[in-house]
Length: 335
Image (cartoon, rainbow, N blue to C red; front, top):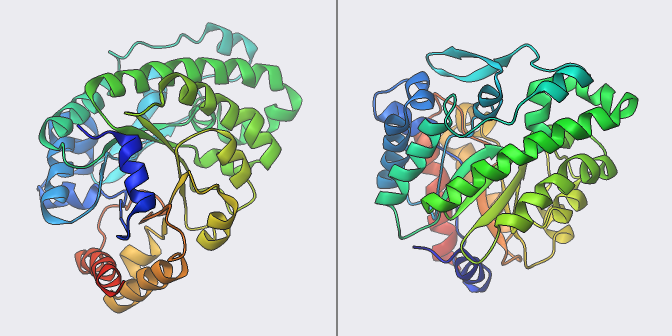
């Protein structure tokens, strides 16, 4: 079992640049399965994670970033296609009455048991590096239930209504993350991309303050919250810090050097190679150069972990995955 706080100290005190990309979809393809199979079957999901770990030298492993799982548990309709990530269809709640009637679900509904199964199977096989589960953040989950555009308006027209919804989302996510911790995961990557669409002050009020509740209940020497916000272009980094999460994960909209200047050194910073343009459309040399440039630009910060800006999508170039890791290997050899 990894003691995650000790692991984080070793990251900050070590000379090796570590890398933990969010990258499970290539593993699904390597196992001969569809995305639909992986997001509905915990055994297939775990097989994909383990296949990636057996081939590529990441310093930690992650689950699929699927922001429909929690919304589905609440009762939202989800559309599945064979080889694309699922999508929430329509709005589940839309006013005070429907939010008041909304029940916080148990962990036995929808695909929650399958995602917990994937976590369990992965933890049973990997104990030499951190294993991270995944979940939506409170604000992003609320946006899936209420409709994101509608929720943005409601924040100013009926903020108390959205607060009630956020409280229910936070209650569920606390239970979900508690179960992940009980299973033996070393942490969870909590995805809050929708929070990048609001101002820093609103991000504190409607996202970070709720993430902080989960952090204060669960984060300790053996369990880490990694707050992901790929919607942040740099304007709400302070809000992310306010969450108290031990690690912050940034998308490719952010400038990593500016982020590292802003984030305290005791917090791990992760990101932010473009998961679509770089992995899917770059040549192998372009990919290598992109990663090497980022590594050189961030070389002065000990608390930095190279990662992707978000989950790498299906159907990326395997030669680009190899180029990603080759750049890391060469960078570490040259130090």
